[in-house]
Image 1 (spheres, rainbow over the protein chains, first blue to last red):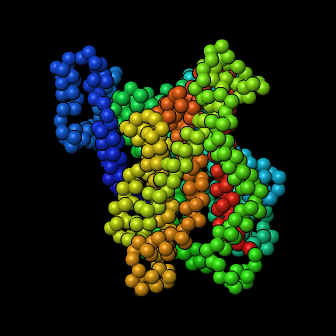
Image 2 (spheres, chains in turn orange, cyan):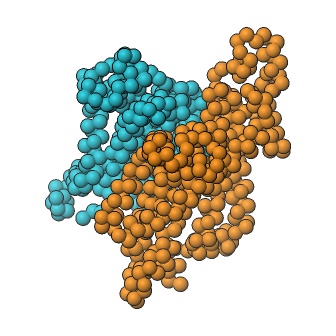
Image 3 (tube, rainbow over the protein chains, first blue to last red):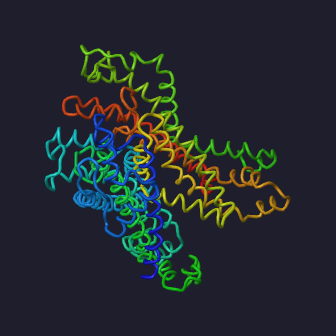
Length: 325
Length: 292
């Protein structure tokens, strides 16, 4: 298990290096000279040359990239912001917790509501409860996040005056943004839970459990839910990853000083080191969450765990073999 | 249509389409989605004829008019009729959605098919490259790309297309891998058919249904993504009335003139909902488990 974890961690390195290369290349070939953008049209040629030299921008592309990666890997240094001259790493560390808290709150809402409502819908398949939940789920996944955010502001801040419109000064400010993203992911998680539960409800072992007179509650949570967990975990994991990036939009709607708004501002002001840094940090978090999801599979499904525990040539047990045992 | 009748008539291709259509039409919710979508498309295409005003016709004297008989969705901060802007904007939003989803699907399916068909090193190279793109969440990737290529309708289309290609490639790769080793493909190899012929004639028709479902929902996804870009100020720019851009511009007035935010949002949500309902209906209609 631990070996698998480190193996996966190692395979992440080339992917993340490639992401760094991709982002670096994209920013490098973006039209417009950063020196002129930052210093303005009035700057003399000497000033421009000096500014470029100070940031290695006069060096060839590969040398620039090499130096960037070297500093990043060995010193954790993302460079210096063009605009403010502040260290990018410091800015990222300052903003990251906000986005992280928002993502955690979002996932908490989505997992709690989404899974419970999904189970409810599956258990009441074909009834009016199921129909209402299906409509809610469909509407939820179709609504753009930014519009839902604006509607929640309209209802809960402007109308009912329960929560502040925007900003980030305490727990009260977390409610609406977390609800905005949480409701969207609740809808998609609910749909996944429902269909995954329904797939399992039709299995023979559920019929066996019913035949031997098992309690309905135990069948739902012990027999069906545990077997339906894999797709649910996948959906929850991707929800967390998307919450990290959905934060880009939500933070803009609610004027939250997180990583996302830092990135959007950096894009509009062409502050490339800041853009590179924030995109990379989000990519790293996204990849780590995906890795954690894969590891969670093993905790949930003994068949996958057995695969990790055994030697690499050990073949994967099929569902039939596992159920025969 | 009974199965025996089909076998007697030997109309294989049409029957598949016909069967799917029959099953699709039996689902009222899916049909509702299709009708709404067609209605919106027709309205937007006819916007020059239907729209009561030009999308750019400003008149400061009538700014911030609440929805009324003359302006059914009200007017904005420059006195422009919101309903007309929604109609014209729908052309942009729908075009961005359909164009980027179909281009992404074509490129993605080709990449996925090549990867799965040739396997080994080709598969490895293509999928590793796509892994890099998939290391970023879609919206974030689209934002990063539009940061590079700049704003505008073209920029939004390219950003959304590139960001969604990996998803299509991944969606076809799995099914093709399992089809590739089946007897009819082996038979095609045995009669020395060209690779392109095997892929196009034998393999792709068998994975068509997941592709169609993916594309249907992908259009909705693309519309939302493009609107998000515009909302962040990175996609379609004013004065073009793209729905996301309209929402972005209306945000400032949310406290006093909430109708400005309401209508563009309803437009996006309605179209995306219609596409999702259609996609759901198509998936059920095409899923062999539902065949009666």
